[in-house]
Image 1 (cartoon, helix red, strand yellow):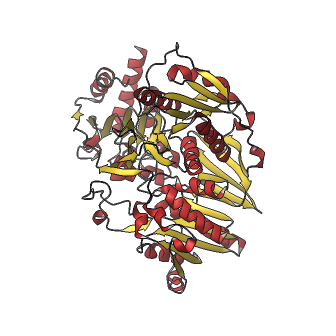
Image 2 (tube, rainbow over the protein chains, first blue to last red; image 1 turned 90 degrees about the vertical axis):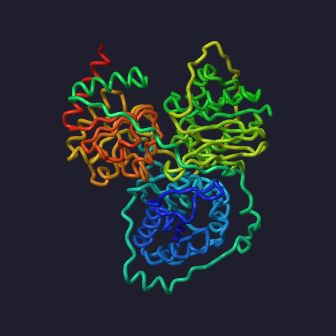
Image 3 (spheres, chains in turn yellow, green; image 1 turned 45 degrees about the vertical axis):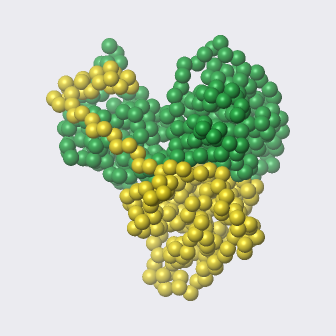
Length: 261
Length: 330
């Protein structure tokens, strides 16, 4: 079984967001550390579990991004991926999801995996669209934000939490899944894994190598034309008094001033 | 720049949720501003039967896809049917609620149509140049991005629930209904929903509720979450939680508010015993009215709260629940 895991290189979630001088994006200077998007760790772990359960197969980690993604892929190899592919282009930093999906679709067509796994979204852009878009381009089924996944032959059963309920999806591979927190407990790279990863290959490709037009990354259907920090909320008021009188006063304010009760 | 705006009417068990009504009303506003019209796609026998009611919110034309096979959601089939509604009605913009289902089908639809994709918008207007201008939170709400779609570019946009205004329905409005060919062979698609599990007690989802009451470490132990539940029940709201207590297993992850949980923007958010870590604030600070109850007057949560009560949760929560019930009954 071949499993393709798509990893996005994102600013660490502890990043204190600052606006770039052009006023249109995150200031990369504010980012102290770039990491694999946290949800992608569940995707990688699930692929490793399936490979290890089957006792055969290959886990391929792929990243579309700048040269700095090498370190993210090296970590994936140290964690247990068998090989890695970097579609290297600095322009990916501002690429929209559909562009990413088109590039990943070209990788998937080349690799012919049985399954593609991603995180439920890349933290930062918080969209969650790349996975379903990729599935649509491949004409594959997908289940997004899964909380469990089991295989039986080429059949799968996946659970997905939706508003107030859990949907159970059943289908057949090849298929694409995006992974929710709690799907599994991602392992950390072992010392041995780190040593071994140094011998594992990271293939570097350009758009041209995938048969894609280099201009693809210059197109944008959606422009980011402003990036700002949310307005600070005005400081509120403290309600004094014993629990009963403070509660009564709060209910009055919520009813009369805020009209939410 | 007269144009047709198509709305996906998300239907579960024959009912349209508020977020769908908000999407129809937003489409109506945008259509009125450009002399355009509003199409609504109702997929499945149940949705088709209920769709006439959407006229009151501003639909001009209902595309009814009266096929029982589409009563259960299937992403590929839904994207294909919506794409045909876009084509038939020459729509230039598709609006969907940013719900689990809406976001899921929107992504496939945007790929299928090679359209611009704008997710989870909290604001959407026409720009001076006749294109679209929207606002969406990124970095879990730590920043806002203004997104623009040029005039003439087909766009698929999802709208965050509870943010866009919902005017009162106007029952005098009428819509025409046309049948949409939906002979999609759902059985040939390689995945389907085989069952839907509902929690033993039907709970409101934090992402959809208009009132959310959340608890954190200040509750001291899992069993004390009942104080938060009692208040949420009294208010008719949903129960949320901080990451710390979810990680400790006090309450399932589906209740978590904040980064790596759900981003919410209810009308009223009450944070009980939550200090206000940046990850939590990112997930709730766009709520309309925020109330914080905490024993530590220095807690960061008070910086975003409209109203704060400093004190002992174990005294305040029961008193507040009582005051809410007294208000409702009196």
